[in-house]
Image (tube, rainbow, N blue to C red; front, side, top):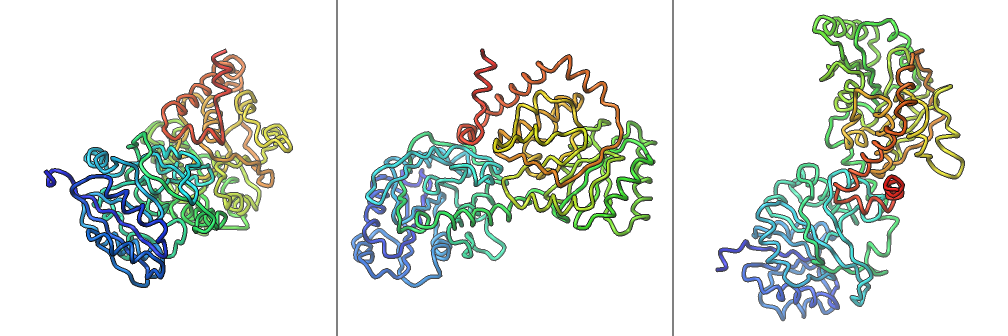
Length: 495
């Protein structure tokens, strides 16, 4: 019976698309689905569109001037009364049998994706876009080919659309001309990752030189950047541009030169997060009071305190990454000092959205010529085979969050190498930052380097296995591999 099937609302917006809109309407009727409504919001077409619309009595349509595609879609979405929403642009059309698939799959999921076929103006298929399942982080990396979603094969419950309304009550941002869909997907995915995928072509969409996305690819890319910057801090509060994270297990005079170097920064939009990883409550209390002494002594800086979940230095760094109140972080240890322009230089580096980690200049520790050979990009092999170095990195917080920070916190020689390798695989860039100078505190790394000497091969293989695990477990990995392909490493491992 019709009442046993969820009602589906198809929302189509149109303006002078008379040559395409009949195919759109017929593809909906061809679904042979008994419980649907097809809402068409026309912007006052002057071609054959209205003649086509009048020939289909089942349509719910209006034709009047609007403020653009997003305004028209907002009108259409607000009129939808179905349980499921299908957003079908006027020059796109559906494959057969889609609605019955949606009726089944959207019972248990708020949003479903399927493959989509890109065509030319005449409808000839150019390529099949897999449109795989994606996390919030996958959607953010718009610089990866097809990291964005083929909108025509995304279907969702109307209740989800209502939940994701903007503060002004609209569904889509009218200020976005090309990527209003990306903004909506990011609002959805931060709470509901796109995990359900139907492995067949569900829709067809045209790309041609007179439709707006096809005609203006560079402007589309820049608008993707706007969306990225809107949402990159959506999972955490943001108070400053950079957070310096310093793990501390006991009160120590070593912290004074570190704080002093930070008071001398030429750019002060940063805070300092002291992460207490003391092993007992009494020492932890001393550390907290030590923090408060610095707050009183250095009123010009924001100095915060957090307690690590475990009494371990790398676990404390993970806590700092989670607790940071800035989109970018720098990892230091007591006694390290930084150059006066470190903060402003770091902020400048991270204006490039693709950058995940920046390696500063650390005298006698990091050889930038080795890590970054001229005209070759980054030498990832150095992450696996070089000598040990403390993770004095500057990083985009969201890149570290995606990886959950350091994994084997008891094994520093493994953790820093694995982090750098996985960041690369996940599609972030690792950049040379020789203009940022970190002068590290004198510290004995004898145990770490001894571990590297005896376990270098095991550590390297474990890191490769770690990346291989990411590759095999993540639906988006095949697409990401087009940018950073780990499979040659896997083949070498198998050999």
